[in-house]
Amino acid sequence: MRMLKSVAAVAAAMLLAASAQAQAPERKEVKLGVGGANSLYYLPLALTEKLGFFKVAPYYMYPGFWEGGPAIHLFTNLEKWNSLPPAYQTIVANAAAYANSDMMAKYDALNPGALRELIGGGAKLKPFPADVIDAAYTAAHEVYDEISAENADFKTIFESVKAFRNEGYLWNQVAEYTYDTFMIRNRTKG
Image (cartoon, rainbow, N blue to C red; front, side, top):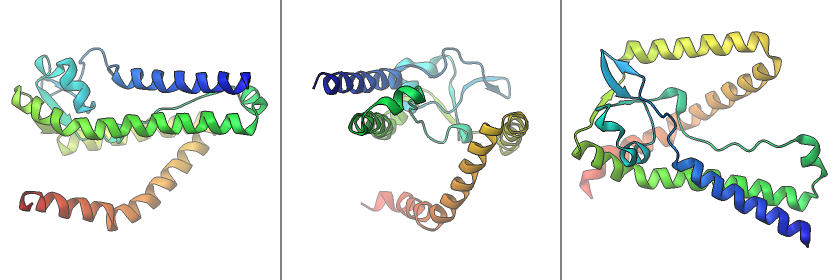
């Protein structure tokens, strides 16, 4: 029972830490500019609005392909993890999954209102120019290729991520993308 309470306390602490981490800014300084203008790249809108970043960087640039969605990660020592009883591993895994889902759901719920506040406060939404986003994508993948050449673990994980992503896009372009596009087109109809 004592161990169960300890694991529950760790799980609760993880949830609190994840919640606090989700509140912290991803970047403390605005360093990115396009065309000589201070810009804020794709941060969660609720965070951008809450911290007033648009006052120093009036352009909110999108999309941020390098951060399609946030995720909370939990890393543990494998030996310590394996020493936990399966029930405790399940508690920790479920707490981590909940913290991740809760954080994403909060941003999904808060971002529409934050977008209205940003625009109302003078922020300017601006898509990255195609050549900029294409160059960033190419440069990022050049870095991933360099890391893959030097790190077999990274290569294995990244190849798996790419394969999964590409398979997911096959379905998303049929179902999710077309549904979202349809609903966006029709949102003013009621």
